[in-house]
Image 1 (cartoon, helix red, strand yellow):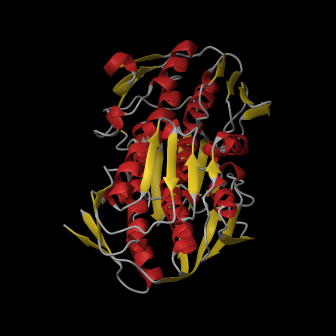
Image 2: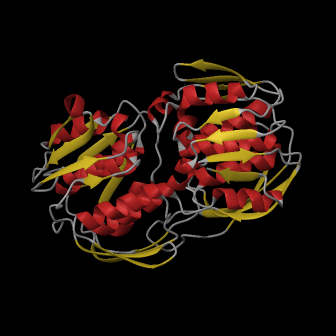
Length: 441
């Protein structure tokens, strides 16, 4: 599928983005590990999160859809998982695969994980290696570092103190989940704080966690019980509208009920540094339920942006928003430097290379670096034929770039948008007050 995009002169209105992808994954998975019923509202019904629902069904949890984004997960607790009858297909979802590896590490059976062609190229060794230290068996392609992977669990697993070389919520979550079946504490140290949805939700479900000095520890003895989980809107999906609202000349865009967990709001900080006019009003979505996640209504209006520098501990707080941020940097005056972001090389695509190559087709001046990008802004973009490479965030970023370019932009390989934001084009066209982005076969 391809999308034809024409430039827009104004954007006006409100948009509600789908539920947070990271929280949706965890709500489904933690519900399958808890005893009793977990009721989830606002669940992201994108392909990645639906893959996680399929996985928990395969492991014996009962999943009932009550309505749009509304699910019940009934399960018997951490000891009640069942051996799957077939290979578990994780689709394009690295989160599904890596978090499941942590769960399967503590099971008294074997399970096999696979995924689509893109996921089978993504590295799994950063999770597999510490799980092996805990006593699990992980075998598969390229020395057990690529899907398909077979995971043979052990019970109990060994306690572990692991110093992660990268700030990765997926690694941290996989090891903490494996700790549910460990014979002692499991501690994960990170070089910078990664998103903390796992810690918030595990505590709310009844696990025993502590945090100190850049490390988080899961202690034995907690009892997970099903809870209500209200999933706020995904700031990674909101990012595309925040960027568009900041750079389209006549724009006033509100995004409702967005999760503003401090470990995820780096984009708001960077856009403010660049001169964006963004206001927020706390909405309270998620208060009093298992996520304990703050949420807010965000409003952005047009502004004259300037280049900035992004690096260090800020990067884990906006790693998924960098494709959208790169579009803003192309329109900002001056130079924007993005560094310490080598993690982008192993996302759904090599996002550093993809950003540099595809935006260059539209006239941007971008220098690719091993761990980031140098973007010379303030130069007009022009319409061109570009491709997402099967990466949902690249596809949406390129659509936003097309809204700002001179002439028509054609974005190829856009079916992947359904991974995280099935209604993206409808939302874009509603704000533009007309069909600025149209699909063709």
